[in-house]
Image: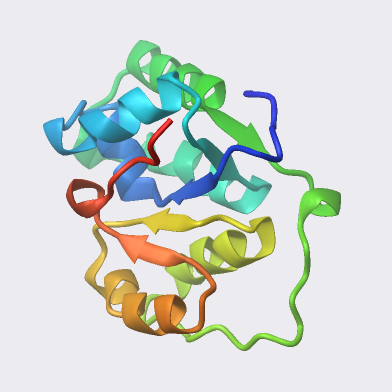
Length: 152
């Protein structure tokens, strides 16, 4: 897992973006990959989001063998910072919008509690909440192709 820096902005990747980045190597994620490698941003994850990532890698529709799953898990773990619960800032004063897909709510909660500036997703149910989270000043929700990395 990657070390944390308070001065580097945080970003949350939902599982589909992680698949595109670490399994499918989607060109839409090239800027994200470069920003992570250059430490322009720190991708953060908590245990529930990491567990979902590990479970999804075993889905038969991806056809990943054990070696490919292990490689994807290792690449993910090398690129992200696993936040312990103590590193999160609970915000009971803030009522996040509810995602239509309850399985995706954890990514919104992680973005808020971790102080992330961005949540990257391709999920329509998550992207529909972008206007609200930006208007409130909590974090931006973007698809990877629309995201611009910070200038060094």
